[in-house]
Length: 416
Ligand code: EPU
View 1: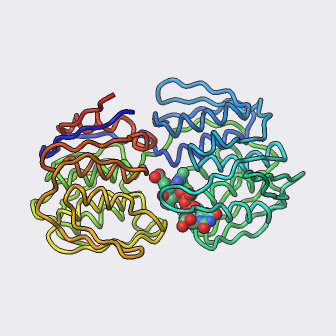
View 2: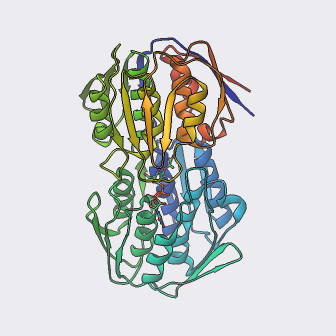
View 3: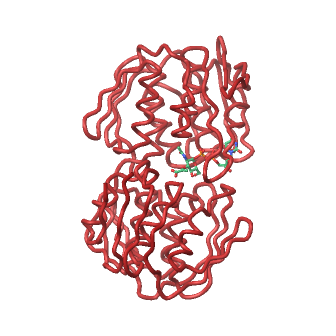
């Protein structure tokens, strides 16, 4: 299996272009199941998760053509309602095919995704919502079996705003009869991106970006041609890299509004950040200040940036506290960062980070995407060599990460 080897100590300078957002691309590619013609998507990142979803859509009967960052999908031939365990277990977002399958084929059989490294991650909101829209749902032999002759609009309330829960139910509500209102819906930019696509297809959705989204069902939807929004977590990861290495980098083709929480928290650490149109300029400070962080649903601080900030705070002056409120087990990186010399103590959902003067390189590995990214960041400043093993997870969500860091001046190699 590939590994990444980083020799720490280089100051990063130059510019880096941000690619399309993985978590926007996944539901958007899946939404092509709701139409019967060729949909064209540009700026689709080249990632393992995108390959997994294309494999699943092909299995369901869709035709797919890929050329670089452009993906075309035609779901006219959609005929298979079953998403099997082997395809779903690779990626939890596969559960997003559930509602489009029921909307188009009147039935679906989708493997339960199961837990993952960062927590149990149940899908009860997806199931409860779909049943409120009129589907019969049973759990059998590790599969969700759902069927509905026709879906009917209803009021759905989320106990906790769920990103994929909101996306899944939107893809049922658009073809349901009558009006659906999603309350306490997620407000992440990826929801807005999916709603833009669905509305271009002919759906009638209002309120994206707020916690109340209403949908007036329509008879059918038309194919679309769109470009995927920039990845806010990739942008945030490079922003932290700039701050961490006392670098001077420009992050281009990003959406600064989508990372405003990250910008605010980085400024509190003493990092100099300026924003102009689609570019963020980051200048790291010699003295990183300690800060406290609490992860929250958007527009709060993203859980997907928590591990990266932990690296920064592990070399800050003083004591920082990070509270993780979204996932119950998202401190997998802590034990690995400790091996690099970080002083971190975890108690329940809080981590106490005492800044140390420097980290020192060591072999490490992680079983989660963002945790793996945090280890690459740690390697950039650790004295000596850091070897990041099992980078399978990194390739799920960051396109050519080592090349982008090389271009900024890092000493980083992928060993095949
Ligand atoms: N939850 C439930 N029941 C449900 C659904 C969610 O209890 O039916 C809980 C979860 O356990 C969690 C909270 O609600 O405590 C929020 O989870 P959410 O459903 O919003 O997470 P998700 O949709 O499974 C997406 C991203 C994650 C990101 C989270 C939070 C995609 C494909 N995944 O997951 O991205 O961390 O939202 O922002 O959009 C990543 O990219 O590395 C990643 C894990």
